[in-house]
Length: 365
Image (cartoon, rainbow, N blue to C red; front, side, top):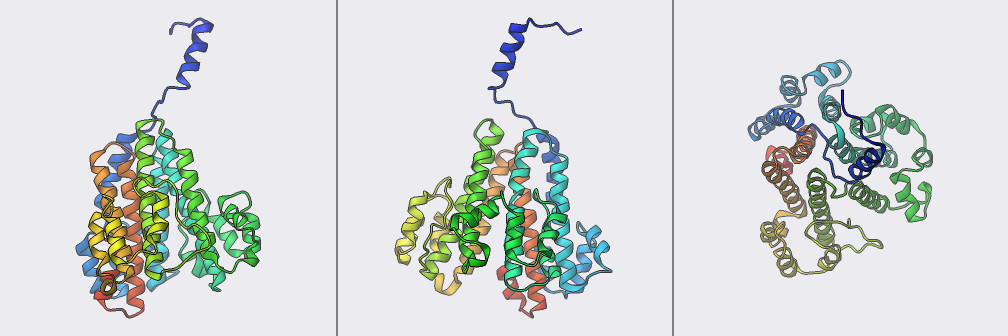
């Protein structure tokens, strides 16, 4: 029988343990499961083979691997690009849901908060789809129900006839908060890029709030998110710099690890030499700076893809240094998402008749 503590000692223990940063989570088990999943990701050689195939052959290759269940389940309902898009979306949601289900404690919370980015992505997809007159079926093809919002709820939003009704259903969320910050109703918005940028900022603001540096696990998670904010801001910077666009609002996300928020806006009006020199000041972008001078030949899209490849490189590097932490899990989440994006690029490129060399340039591997 366990000894019974005096009441005053029990109260004292409860009080001090409330402030001790106890890290909870089955890290060894989850990271082992994720390593096995990462080994099943498509290789560069597989992508290269797919570039030489037609869409039905690509679907067959996918049905022999990690996407088998989804391809077989959907084969009687869809074909071609539609089959690949639906299967990859459902597989992505299923894999992420599985990771959450076999995670515990603080680890499970952190992964869940991070995956709420798919709620953001899905609501943006629904809004864009309705703006461009896409059918409910077309919108559903791009939905990845891997966040907190259930697939049934997302479908109910897609079925609503107007954006006003969509945002009424989203009242109290960051999606409607971004609209309120603009001081407009959905029917009054003319440039939805501002709403999208505000929504992205709210997502990262909230993510940093719920992940304080309380334990080693939360510290590593917070650093990962802050590095990702640098990548997001860098993508925005390159697009604005290339177009020399001026916006009536601040599109950058606060909280980056290396690039201060105040310095991002200062770099937009710089010439090529000035921007190159400034980017060399940061370890994150030192290698990227050399490519800026080739912008006219490469195009801004190529530079943005270089930034996205940098994200994969950074995620992998820190996951290797901390193998029994949340970082290998986040690294896999990022890579799995990128794999699905690459497959969609290949399928859509094939459908549009793009040359293999053109499609290859669009991939981020």
